[in-house]
Image (cartoon, rainbow, N blue to C red; front, side):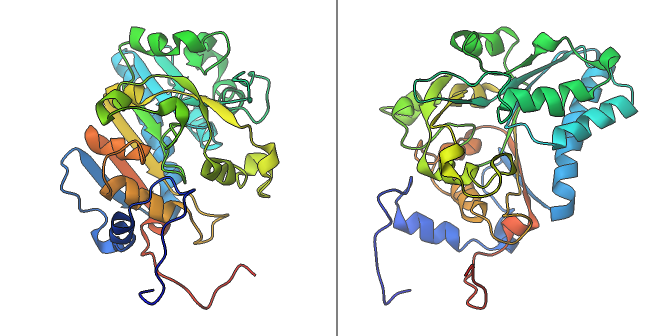
Length: 312
């Protein structure tokens, strides 16, 4: 590409050309190597990563039950894999009375009104139907321990987590924009004068990045059809403070387009793991505190052009 030079688009959330070139060239054989002892990076088989994610969550719930200790989890956009966690809970007869879960985010409209629990594309709706209601009634925690942002509770969302001693584990994955939760790069609601100020920010209603709108329009929830008109313009989200104050961050990354090798995540995870720690790459905060980072073989794959394939 040396015979054609150009600047990164103004719409891109991060525009340092040298950093982008460097991380783009990180090979699969080197991607588990990181100088930061806080950051554990592991590649899993594509066929294993979803199961391992479900098992990780289940195993923590099982341990909390056996030890009769409170377990507080921050969980990402609800996904059908939570039904697998519920299956294991039922199969092994695990009492979940000590479990508290907080959804890390929820959709909101242009005026900042948070989607109600009845909204079928909502995250709390999915968490209740894919997880909570799948657990046998005798094993469920009280329903008020399965929590998501709502218009009623959002002003106290940070305090609710703090009052429980903070999260034991914050789960999640990295978005196309580099977001973690809906902490978006360039969002006016997360504008800060310094990294230190940004790290202390808590929950807020945030304007979604065009990258996040595009990413979400490919989700099964919205028909996998690129229908950007179906995606709400804003969201309620936790802030960097809730993520960084968790005892552990556990990031799972395997997004491909309908089980093909096409993925927007292959580049973004490299940028988050090996780029600078900056609000322009929100997921780079994983470098700041103990974090377990998992990616599939498809995401770890080398970034290289293929002139024999085409979308057209």
